[in-house]
Length: 120
Ligand code: SF4
Image (cartoon, rainbow, N blue to C red):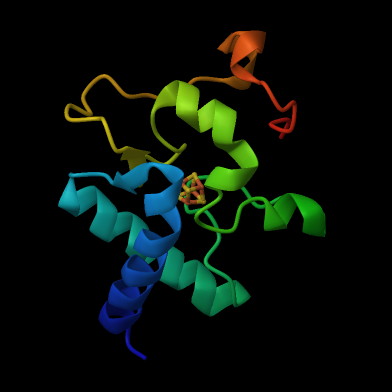
């Protein structure tokens, strides 16, 4: 499968995963296209579409938490930021992405972490 076809396939699959989680693709199509292309490259290299904006940990458990879409593993953190780290996905209620940014976990109020499973 060539890169363009795989990007389309990943987009189709990822849409089905993130939609019930309350997320959608970033409306910035150029950014989405770029990130999906990076993921296809990572998938070709590692066999798995890992996160394009995070360094890969050495341990398997850490790596598995960075398989896209990693939203379930970092749910409270992303819900607070209204986006995932790469901004590939944003909350469904986001209409203006200009104010979105990565927020370090240390800057997020403890109350945002209800389940306590968001430690990286
Ligand atoms: S931060 Fe976003 S792009 Fe990266 S793996 Fe998680 S969901 Fe995918």
